[in-house]
Length: 310
Ligand SMILES: [Zn+2]
Image (tube, rainbow, N blue to C red; front, side, top):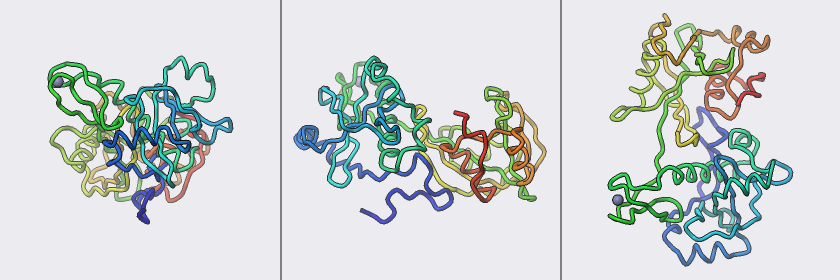
């Protein structure tokens, strides 16, 4: 085990969904005999997911890993090993999740509550389940595909082509000007008063730095110079990887080009703090890298009613 396991980039340490400690032991994924024995072992731990939710213990602060559903091997996704224990996940029927009632909770609700081991497990399990749910057919020929590599690929039944889980990179950035002010935007689809950092998907053939500059220019008309990487967090809603940056603004005039962004404003630390305290501004929730980017600029964690926003 390496000393850095579970530690994220020093710019944004311990992002809620980036704290994984389970070793993925990817070589096990092709060892069917080992997988079968691990599944049957008394030590096996199983994450049960259902449509973006996961089963929690009665206390609600850790995963319920003690039940082993009766499912065939192709529905057992191998997540890895930790302290000698094998971990799998199984996507269960929504009816079963409903029957279990309030013990299934969404990743947004539990991601920041769970400990590091469980947070890493549930992000891995839900990201895999999301991919399988929408990639049942071959993108080459349209034939059905089957699960392979203990849930980490699918193989076309007709032409044998292999397909791997996709992750969609998205950049998200704190834009800061020469006066150390922070630029935040409000999307028309969001609750009133909620502001957050700008963000957008990386386009084909684009570098991350180019994506940061293009998104800021498109959304608010501000030119960006230097771009520094601060950290990343998986965001499986359904399949994003958020790549966090801080970007130096070369201009400050805001011009809204993008219908998505309804407002954008520059904040000093004092104006942000006062707006948050008065309830005039809602910050993104603590589980998000957006919140951590704001706090990285602010210099310390912030309390706000934004915590209730999901
Ligand atoms: Zn095919």
